[in-house]
Image (cartoon, rainbow, N blue to C red; front, side, top):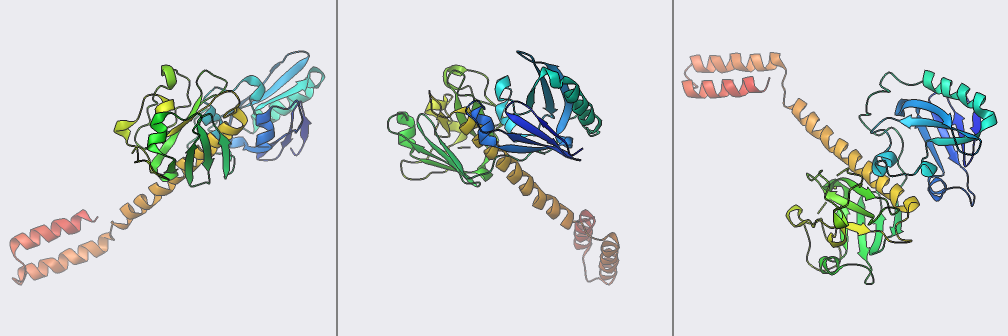
Length: 322
């Protein structure tokens, strides 16, 4: 394709295998778009393409991502408003015919698995290092560790007693992000093995339930994850969470942060699974080699050099290696 379609706040560049979305930088452009700058979306990451009437003489071209294909969308968990949806391109109504042409072109390039959830992330996450200021502390992520440093003006007594926290992504199963535009928003890490979301402050719903850490450490500098058994139900009492407030943890800072952590967690889990598979395969021996060893064992048994019990035990061990 190789063509460019310019809309309001963004421009889509159509390549043979992907769409490069470039976001404008301007006072009217949503801050999330300015933070993302650009995103390359492979055709394999899309499930469908729609073209619908917009507001005030516009049309909206939207590429619908497959579930599980984009860490940003997974972290957002449906909480983004239409105006902050990076997959929407708003165009003047007079460009509807042109938009329909590109919509048809994109539909023709959707993969055979378009209707299925993606098995891995296909769209790149925002890159670390990154940080943002929450209401009760500062959150930072260097690509390997998430750290929380508490503010004495906002952090709860429970967090001060636990001390500043550091969480390796290898000990997380994911992230919960509740939009700061909602009541009692937060970013919360979940201990590995605890994928079920815990209600946020006041028991509210709507967090991105994607799983991540915790043992509450003694007061001090940096601490490891908190213990699952001691995990508080409220995010403002949880040392594995930071809470948002007016001007603290805005969407354009906290959502890319959550997406980057989530992508790193998933990547580390996938990498950890590979050695296990390799080791499992390494334990299997060549059947011809096993047969030769059993034959030799039988000769030792017949010669009286190996007892009946020793022969049976060793033969069983060799057969188990097949």
